[in-house]
Length: 160
Image (cartoon, rainbow, N blue to C red; front, side):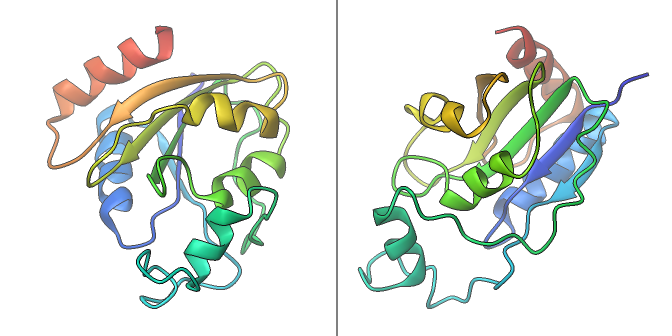
């Protein structure tokens, strides 16, 4: 059985919780996308235009270094990819992750956590980082989610 991979980046723990719930509901494997240099609270201050996250998001070609490149993507048909929405899109570390592996022929289902916006054009913006992959919008996983509900959402997202 080809189990799904649930890969996620979480700066504050919110997306990690959603990813763990999804992995539990699907029986999938969990992989945390970690930056080589962890983010501090100051780095995440979106109101400070000089904060690390603000500077990274202003420079679309910038790619933060990853702590490792050992995600078990080989042999997976479906990868659920989760992240917080930053500046109406995925953080640039998600591009770093996508560019570190070969996702040709795989389906990547996006899910996110957000305090105020949806996925918007995120799938379209991420496609150049994973040539040959099918990247589709899943949805937001804010709050607590029940297992049965997550399984239904995941099936709908994969085929949507």
